[in-house]
Image (cartoon, rainbow, N blue to C red; front, top):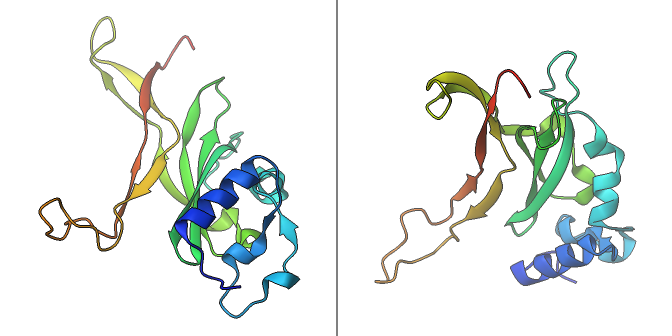
Length: 179
Protein backbone atom coordinates (compact mmCIF):
# COMPACT_ATOMS: atom_id res chain seq x y z
CA UNK A 1 0.00 0.00 0.00
CA UNK A 2 1.31 3.46 -0.82
CA UNK A 3 2.17 5.66 2.13
CA UNK A 4 0.76 8.70 0.32
CA UNK A 5 -2.56 9.82 1.67
CA UNK A 6 -5.28 11.34 -0.48
CA UNK A 7 -7.56 14.06 0.89
CA UNK A 8 -10.59 11.77 0.48
CA UNK A 9 -8.90 8.89 2.34
CA UNK A 10 -7.71 11.24 5.11
CA UNK A 11 -11.25 12.61 5.60
CA UNK A 12 -12.72 9.10 5.68
CA UNK A 13 -10.17 7.97 8.25
CA UNK A 14 -10.77 11.01 10.44
CA UNK A 15 -14.51 10.38 10.33
CA UNK A 16 -13.92 6.75 11.30
CA UNK A 17 -11.61 7.82 14.12
CA UNK A 18 -14.18 10.23 15.53
CA UNK A 19 -16.71 7.39 15.58
CA UNK A 20 -14.23 5.19 17.46
CA UNK A 21 -13.27 2.91 14.56
CA UNK A 22 -9.53 2.11 14.66
CA UNK A 23 -7.41 4.48 12.56
CA UNK A 24 -4.23 2.76 11.51
CA UNK A 25 -0.88 4.49 11.92
CA UNK A 26 0.10 3.79 8.30
CA UNK A 27 -1.52 7.08 7.33
CA UNK A 28 1.48 9.03 8.58
CA UNK A 29 4.32 6.52 8.31
CA UNK A 30 7.41 7.44 6.33
CA UNK A 31 7.62 6.20 2.75
CA UNK A 32 8.91 2.64 2.56
CA UNK A 33 7.37 1.56 5.89
CA UNK A 34 4.98 -1.34 5.92
CA UNK A 35 1.46 -0.66 7.09
CA UNK A 36 1.07 -4.27 8.23
CA UNK A 37 3.50 -3.72 11.11
CA UNK A 38 1.68 -0.61 12.35
CA UNK A 39 -0.50 -1.03 15.42
CA UNK A 40 -4.10 0.23 15.11
CA UNK A 41 -4.95 3.43 16.99
CA UNK A 42 -7.90 5.76 16.87
CA UNK A 43 -8.21 9.53 16.97
CA UNK A 44 -10.22 9.23 20.18
CA UNK A 45 -7.47 7.12 21.77
CA UNK A 46 -4.86 9.71 20.84
CA UNK A 47 -6.84 12.58 22.27
CA UNK A 48 -7.36 10.64 25.49
CA UNK A 49 -3.70 9.69 25.64
CA UNK A 50 -1.13 11.21 27.94
CA UNK A 51 0.36 13.58 25.34
CA UNK A 52 -2.56 15.98 24.98
CA UNK A 53 -3.43 15.69 28.66
CA UNK A 54 -0.16 17.46 29.44
CA UNK A 55 -0.53 21.20 30.02
CA UNK A 56 0.49 23.47 27.14
CA UNK A 57 4.16 24.46 27.31
CA UNK A 58 3.11 28.13 27.59
CA UNK A 59 1.05 27.41 30.72
CA UNK A 60 1.67 30.39 33.04
CA UNK A 61 3.16 29.72 36.49
CA UNK A 62 0.33 28.58 38.75
CA UNK A 63 -2.01 28.32 35.74
CA UNK A 64 -4.41 25.45 35.18
CA UNK A 65 -4.47 25.34 31.39
CA UNK A 66 -5.34 22.16 29.51
CA UNK A 67 -6.06 21.25 25.91
CA UNK A 68 -9.73 21.00 24.93
CA UNK A 69 -11.04 20.64 21.38
CA UNK A 70 -8.77 19.41 18.61
CA UNK A 71 -9.19 20.08 14.89
CA UNK A 72 -6.92 17.82 12.79
CA UNK A 73 -6.16 18.54 9.15
CA UNK A 74 -3.75 17.40 6.48
CA UNK A 75 -0.94 19.74 5.38
CA UNK A 76 0.90 17.59 2.83
CA UNK A 77 0.97 13.94 1.68
CA UNK A 78 2.74 12.82 4.89
CA UNK A 79 2.29 15.81 7.20
CA UNK A 80 -0.71 16.73 9.35
CA UNK A 81 -1.49 19.14 12.17
CA UNK A 82 -3.93 19.41 15.01
CA UNK A 83 -5.25 22.77 16.20
CA UNK A 84 -5.83 22.46 19.96
CA UNK A 85 -7.80 25.02 21.94
CA UNK A 86 -6.71 25.76 25.50
CA UNK A 87 -9.19 25.73 28.38
CA UNK A 88 -8.46 28.18 31.16
CA UNK A 89 -9.42 28.13 34.81
CA UNK A 90 -11.73 31.16 34.91
CA UNK A 91 -14.93 29.33 34.04
CA UNK A 92 -16.99 27.57 31.43
CA UNK A 93 -16.38 28.85 27.89
CA UNK A 94 -13.35 30.87 28.98
CA UNK A 95 -10.68 29.78 26.53
CA UNK A 96 -7.06 30.92 26.57
CA UNK A 97 -6.20 30.54 22.89
CA UNK A 98 -5.05 27.88 20.42
CA UNK A 99 -1.84 25.93 19.72
CA UNK A 100 -0.98 23.95 16.59
CA UNK A 101 1.03 20.72 16.71
CA UNK A 102 2.54 19.39 13.46
CA UNK A 103 3.17 15.65 13.04
CA UNK A 104 3.87 12.99 10.44
CA UNK A 105 3.04 10.00 12.64
CA UNK A 106 0.16 9.71 15.09
CA UNK A 107 2.64 8.57 17.73
CA UNK A 108 4.69 11.74 17.16
CA UNK A 109 2.38 14.29 18.79
CA UNK A 110 4.58 16.25 21.20
CA UNK A 111 3.20 19.10 23.32
CA UNK A 112 6.73 20.49 23.57
CA UNK A 113 6.60 21.26 19.84
CA UNK A 114 3.26 23.12 20.00
CA UNK A 115 3.27 26.54 18.37
CA UNK A 116 1.05 29.24 19.93
CA UNK A 117 -1.41 30.59 17.33
CA UNK A 118 -3.67 32.85 19.41
CA UNK A 119 -3.80 34.07 23.01
CA UNK A 120 -6.18 36.28 24.98
CA UNK A 121 -5.32 39.93 25.44
CA UNK A 122 -6.79 43.00 27.12
CA UNK A 123 -8.05 46.09 25.29
CA UNK A 124 -10.53 48.93 25.62
CA UNK A 125 -14.08 47.79 24.83
CA UNK A 126 -16.27 50.45 23.14
CA UNK A 127 -19.44 48.54 24.12
CA UNK A 128 -19.08 48.82 27.92
CA UNK A 129 -21.02 51.32 30.03
CA UNK A 130 -19.29 53.74 30.21
CA UNK A 131 -17.46 53.04 26.91
CA UNK A 132 -13.78 52.20 26.85
CA UNK A 133 -13.45 50.01 29.95
CA UNK A 134 -10.80 47.32 29.61
CA UNK A 135 -12.01 43.80 28.75
CA UNK A 136 -10.30 40.49 28.16
CA UNK A 137 -10.62 39.47 24.52
CA UNK A 138 -11.18 35.72 24.86
CA UNK A 139 -9.95 33.76 21.82
CA UNK A 140 -11.98 30.70 20.88
CA UNK A 141 -10.65 27.71 18.87
CA UNK A 142 -8.93 28.49 15.59
CA UNK A 143 -10.22 26.57 12.59
CA UNK A 144 -7.71 26.14 9.78
CA UNK A 145 -7.99 26.02 6.06
CA UNK A 146 -5.85 26.47 2.99
CA UNK A 147 -5.86 27.54 -0.62
CA UNK A 148 -4.68 24.44 -2.54
CA UNK A 149 -1.34 24.56 -4.31
CA UNK A 150 -1.96 25.29 -7.98
CA UNK A 151 -5.37 26.92 -7.33
CA UNK A 152 -6.62 29.19 -10.10
CA UNK A 153 -9.00 32.13 -10.20
CA UNK A 154 -12.20 31.95 -12.24
CA UNK A 155 -10.45 33.60 -15.17
CA UNK A 156 -7.78 30.84 -15.14
CA UNK A 157 -4.98 32.99 -13.70
CA UNK A 158 -3.02 31.62 -10.71
CA UNK A 159 -4.53 32.38 -7.31
CA UNK A 160 -2.17 34.76 -5.45
CA UNK A 161 -2.43 32.75 -2.20
CA UNK A 162 -2.18 29.24 -3.69
CA UNK A 163 -0.37 26.86 -1.37
CA UNK A 164 -0.90 28.95 1.77
CA UNK A 165 -2.99 28.36 4.85
CA UNK A 166 -5.07 30.51 7.16
CA UNK A 167 -6.82 30.31 10.49
CA UNK A 168 -10.05 31.90 11.70
CA UNK A 169 -11.09 32.37 15.32
CA UNK A 170 -13.85 34.13 17.23
CA UNK A 171 -13.09 36.55 20.05
CA UNK A 172 -15.48 37.72 22.75
CA UNK A 173 -14.99 40.54 25.26
CA UNK A 174 -15.18 39.44 28.91
CA UNK A 175 -15.24 42.01 31.73
CA UNK A 176 -12.17 42.15 33.95
CA UNK A 177 -14.35 42.16 37.07
CA UNK A 178 -17.56 40.36 37.91
CA UNK A 179 -17.16 37.07 36.01
